[in-house]
Image 1: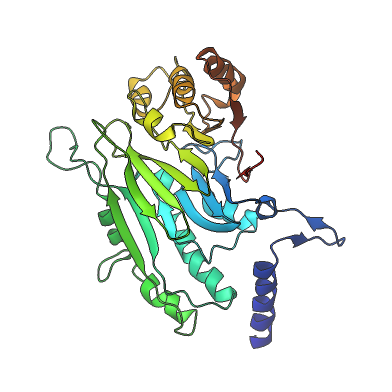
Image 2 (image 1 turned 60 degrees about the vertical axis):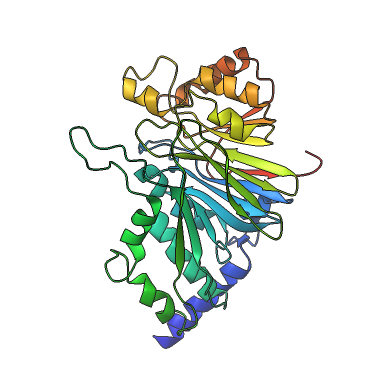
Length: 344
């Protein structure tokens, strides 16, 4: 049994050290991680919405690389854990998780990914002591109808309810991280609440590191749900992620101005579905085109694809063009990599 365990760990170490998969015939399969190039990249881990469909899209998740290192994870919906496995990425250096809002299709695989961070450190022979920083919206006070109970907690409360001692539902990670590393690693996290009031919102600096990584956020309209859009800037390149938003106000234009790449919520049509709540929560293609045009973004990536929009993507592109946007429009696919380089 010990011999089998040693062989298994040895095989896993090889996979961690060399993510390119060697097939039975000796050929090399190119994995998503092999396509990451340049100073700033984003890998789509999940391009779908909250509905399980035959198209197989995972829910929302986007992994940001700086100089080829996976650094920031924006949302971590259901299925993103599997996409991480398929991508060949080693998450041992991941230290920033940005949650646009606390809907399940944006947070469902949070614990699985965090646990993988510690496994990847262990398999790579490194001790993990630095915290994973988790950022998201603060409670905005919107109550359930006819009650005083807030519909959504602050991100810090949400995270503590998972991991904090003594009462977190997944508090076992505090001892588990040590146990799998022979006491070398320690489980640490830090949660951070960001402003979520939409009216008169301004850009908030989330993080500005010594090596030039700048993360910013702004509150966006997602009905009663505290929600954020994020902007990642590094070495002169910028990626903006809308999260989920009805985007009726100016906030998306404000944070997306002159971005190299804008990843946008594409869940509904202007006329569908015929239920008002969805139009309060998500962006219609006409408004999406207006934002892309007004913000002067170079490339627009349609994501958060749903059964409503999947069969009508050509029509959505046409609607966006009618609003005056002439930049590059791409449709997100799981494990697609977008590289931002000086010659792009």
